[in-house]
Length: 257
Image (cartoon, rainbow, N blue to C red; front, side, top):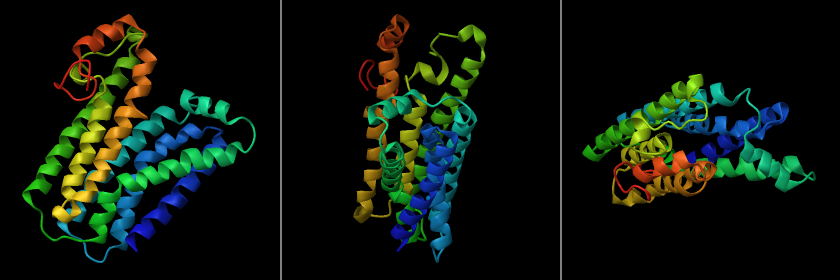
């Protein structure tokens, strides 16, 4: 029942964003919807549950802080900007026939499905209330906090760096960006490993690990890191930066992960 409610809520949510994006003639607005979608899942779960526990409240707070912050950050940054080059290239590949249908299925529905999978720990927690918090769940809160610091800190440093006209055309290589080339993406992945641990109640719920594995693989090999690495890989300053800074995981490796 809970899973059906979440799936229906996400469908309505992304249909609304499709209508908004079509009105603005900018499908890249779906990026703003990403963080907010998890907040919809969490609050929808809270409304639909019969029992409110400490574990559920922990999930609700962590997801609301993470999703709300990301939603606000991307809305401020992208709402009035031209359409992101990724979506411009998609339009070119799609041609002129059935563009809206292709966009709805390949962008909005696809993101909704991915969001549903990654949000499984949230949905499970509200569908299966657990009144106690184990030590690894509190560890999950701490891990989430570390990830949140990396993500917010990385975004904040990059935003301040770009505001300075003297930094135009330069790379940010200090602060969080000195220990990983993608602190915001790394932080996002860590946040979801934390949420997974908070949702984990026994060995039988270990299947929820699908969520953090999915978001980590997406960020590392599909939608996040590869696109930026490709964008800068021909620049000499980036090559020098990459030679002594871990790609994703701080400390672990230099040119690899």
